[in-house]
Length: 242
Length: 242
Image (cartoon, rainbow over all chains, first blue to last red; front, side):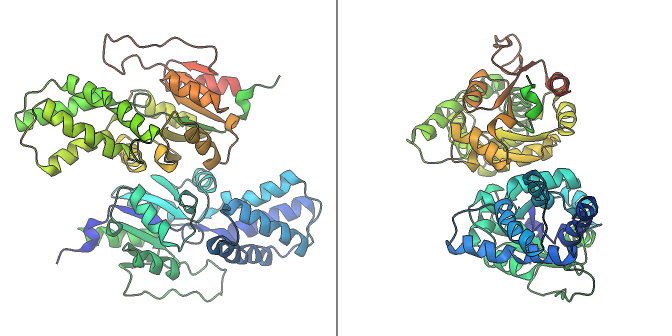
């Protein structure tokens, strides 16, 4: 039987946690801000709280309780609450907006750039993130991520894991679903992509939620590839397609 | 008065004719096909006829006579007629589809890559083409065009010069219209962008329709920049923003 991975023409990537280290980036920028403005905050707790607000906010959009709202706007709604909760005062509107855009300035995991450059030689590589287009575009520029194409939930007015996102990405890339592989560190994202007919590549990111946190990093036989990082993914994909 | 070009954060580019030489590329690929398949055709006339079918086909979509149809599909509709008209026979369906995708394999003008790389250091550079996302993505890979982001009429279900395209591009890039400059070799495209509040950069491409053809290459004072090529555009933009 022909290896089904031979037909893969494009890889689409989850971004927050899979490509970039949102938590480490937020903590580092928070600490710099804290020193500059003499604000004493537990920035790790702040980062975790910001991220924790993300799914409930998206759920309100997915359920229809809230009309289409970009991640930039959802992040800002959560941030405004956190500034109260963490008693962060004395920031100007421009400073708050700059802080909100820390999500445009996240740092890639150490293997991400090299792994993406290697994968890009063989297939189309694109984002498929709930982050909005401007966020992903600015992040790619900031972090040197060599995407062929920026795809976002924003283009479909649907957030992952809604099927419109996976099927929409395949359509825009001119591919059948089985010609596209979703790559993510999150199994729910991969299972939703698989249900739409996409191939799946799991990349464990044990440090996404910080050192010492338990993360499900077990390989799953339902996924087409299970990889340690993007270099391992590139090697395994090349082998499967050889 | 502050120079309004200081506020430009993104450049969006027309592609066919402005970035790539569609006519030269089509003729070269046609001639290769002709030699391989022993088909005797005037490939320059063929290229011109293919391009001539493009505006009327899009006009049918813009007027609503035809539902949303991608450029790949419009190109194929025109191609099927041209195969008859030019008496090109004996191509398999796979060969016809490959020929249709010649539009994914267009060659950049000599200055395009270097000019884009230079511009990319200072601002976001994106396509804003009537070509569909897959076409533009494949072309960028083929031609080494270093876009930060692929934007297409396809994302808005509207073809240029409909205002939805210019305003939609600014929105997706997280910019106000006046923070975005449309770059094109076609004055109607620039005038439509300008009417939406975008800045405009005109780049003359005297060879777009072949050597010896008359092309309107006069600078216009209504455009923010008039340039000879992308290197000249980069130099003039840098000077205006200094």
